[in-house]
Image 1 (tube, rainbow, N blue to C red):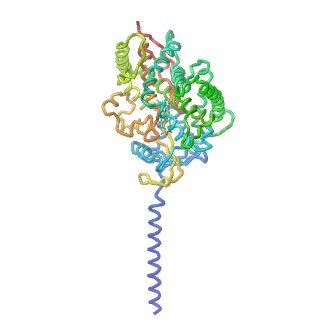
Image 2: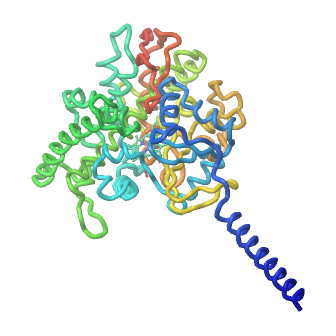
Image 3: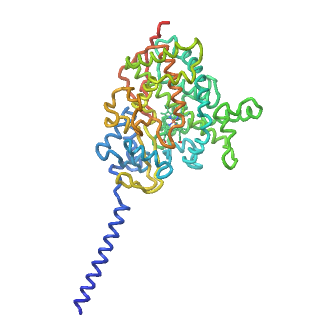
Length: 479
Ligand code: HEM
């Protein structure tokens, strides 16, 4: 009898063990899948310094490719700007993130950005981004864009006459910034005053550099300078907004003349209008997003066209055919820009090699699996343009400048992502295309040029820029 009880007890223990084993095993396979491989670096700063410093040294792709080689080609773990993070790599990573926007992931900006744009902290970056997108369709609709070509051409003529013509040497980057800023401030808030451009130039530079930085608010840090600059610019913008309200009330300004009028006169679903400080933040965001990116692209076009005479010749030929087909003095129009196919392929190759935005962050909305790895809720996820743009399996001989990559159907989906993708793809893409092409038209029509510092260093902070601003010697075409 005793042996019967012992056998029964043994059987019972065995069954319980098997049950517990299955319970444990099942839990392990669903809930404790491994985190992506990688390391989290030092406390608090994590790997932020390596992340930022590879950019300062001009090779932001190094941070990504070192870890792709060491850990995994699809996703690795890190710790950036105070947050646990995973970096998704390659076309698969881009596709996953862009297709799961607001399902598994949502917009996220580092806390440095939230502090520089205070209205985001009252709600959230996500809500602010939604508000921003609601304001934009009218500004970027095709009829409006067609109208901007003439205005852009007009401003470009004045810009080249004032800042490039009759000069033997110029420093490119401050000029391309000046050009794209003029356009933005004219088209977003209808300002044409040269003094205003001067007044804003320095604070805008400081703001852009401190935006993606380690959020330490002490005198002298890039972050501290960015906050100070943001306050200063927003104060100026609020004066402009107040004046516009008066002008709209008195019929001196038109409700459709620019983004500012639109923001003042558009209410949300509950009939609420945006507060002045909120509008100032949105305009500031657009001015930053809408001019720094394009100015970096224009500067790199000048760099590559100086280095590659045969590419310059192709662009020159195309632009002169357009210039010669028009009566003297007539402004460029939409049809002219559609003919600039080769020039746009060249610009795309520039955006591939020197993407103005290196990538962007998302936040995981829930725990999910990606390629066999577990991504916990709340982790930040970074997609990086360089993980495809400079990958030899995606773009063979990635360092070779080859605009023919964009002929025909062009690069495979999710591989060429200078403007991002999915629902959050850059809404200013078409606007940027127009301003870049108008810039190229005026540049090559007037000059050939050579670089004055042959191997000038590139710094990425957070946009790529030539360290000395790309000084060039100009050779005007003979009339
Ligand atoms: C060469 C020029 C430009 C480049 C390379 C560029 C790049 C990008 C990229 C990569 C994103 C997506 C970021 C993400 O995935 O979170 C983005 C978003 C955005 N861009 Fe651009 N951009 C350019 C020009 C412009 C211009 C001219 C404007 C405005 C006039 C603009 C306004 C915006 C806005 C408002 C967003 C945020 C969209 C959202 O969060 O839903 N961009 N841009």
